[in-house]
Length: 110
Image 1 (cartoon, rainbow, N blue to C red):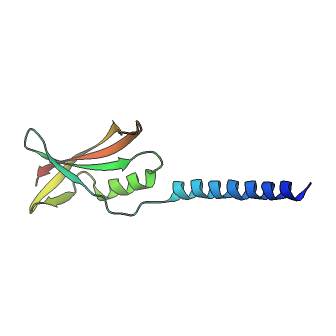
Image 2 (cartoon, rainbow, N blue to C red; image 1 turned 90 degrees about the vertical axis):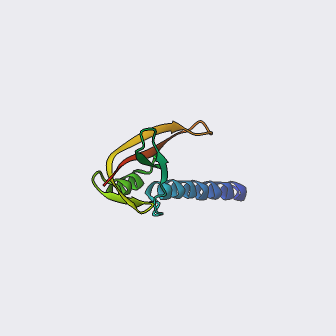
Image 3 (spheres, helix red, strand yellow; image 1 turned 135 degrees about the vertical axis):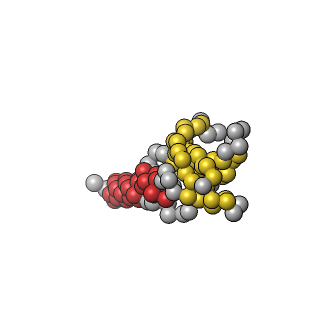
């Protein structure tokens, strides 16, 4: 083997190790940022919260969400206390033609 073959082989191994590290790191990375709701008034006057960017490899984030926003818990919006009555996972298509999941949390005044 000549020196060029060894260098190319070494670079290939380094690139493969880096790609594996990135994949494993992204699978185990848990986004610890707070959830940011968008509040919406429904046609019937009730209120709901929407949270974007769930699904795929974000199972840990989804688990944290269900711990923080469980049915029966209360949230405050504009000085009024609301109780969580229902949580739905809604699939939607993004501009990049990817499917993503948003959480829709239905509320009623407590």
